[in-house]
Length: 466
Image 1 (cartoon, rainbow, N blue to C red):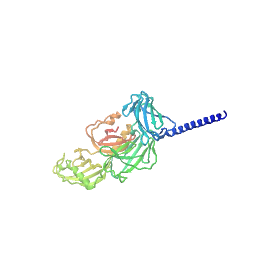
Image 2 (cartoon, one colour; image 1 turned 45 degrees about the vertical axis):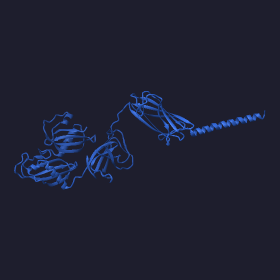
Image 3 (tube, one colour; image 1 turned 180 degrees about the vertical axis):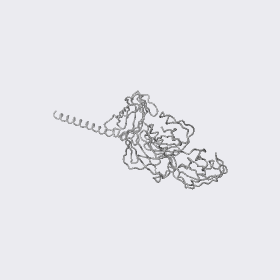
């Protein structure tokens, strides 16, 4: 009896030890071999968790797409993703197919060598605000263990608030619209929003795109120090860049745009205007298209002066001689010397051409381009600018810098008189007018245009960029 009792206790102790060893060994084996989710995208997953929660949402009736890259442990061999439930107000889509009932198998298969699952689904938000849920199960299978995760997604649905256009944050303007290769461009970036705008470098992230005939494509960018730069509300930044500053980006003639954070200003690069001989050839070819040859012109001109037009291009002053009639009011059989002032655009196109027909026509000027007499302007360009500025500022349209000036015949439309409810001058018919275009002081990139009678100085019309 005494001997049996110690044997019984020894047996019990041995059994408990073996059982404990089996339990401990099984626990270690499960910890090593049970499949687990290790990462969702780049975020590590707690090994002890089997429930994953995510938050998101959108606006009412908005379609939102969700993509996740899920990494599993080395012991996982197969996977199975099932939509277990979702709020009845939601529309859940598997690709473009609507999930009508649950449970619904979303994906299953063998895990690739990379042990990753590419999970994707889409949800159309309800037409009412609130909080909604979607529940998935993700089952990983291995040998000899498997593991199931609960994936709970909470959607917060908010009212639709349209986002303001990008132009509500920034304005990008240039000093002109046409440039030559190698010319310096002055770019102005203004924060027109009520929030501070941030940029990734000291050049305000300025980049250039070129139109290839079908779409815009990246062409070049302005280098700047890699420092975070900001513009507070109302502040402006300036960037000057020589077109072709990078030797591998010469800016050949074409259509371009300069952009900052999706806001653009378009411009054109044109060929350089040529030497005096080439300018002379352009002028002669133009005069051949007018009525000048009718006056017995010998087809030659004498260039008296060439100077830069302030809006770009060239102004060419030429003399030429006619020997007989052929023009309205012209003296027959009279040799007359004429002086023509011809303005060429940066593209080499004639934009205006006026000729003084000697002393026979009381100071009248012949418009070579439009083939008609015009009276000599009494109001000077500077006077017209002052008249236009004072008029617009006086009726509450604050003007900025002058963008354009030119003489042109216009039929009065009294645009500004109608807006300001002013009494209109009693004039009509075509009038020789100064066309003065100002930048809008509070809206860079937009303009006010005013027409001023070149004889009387009265404002007779205009328009604006809205």
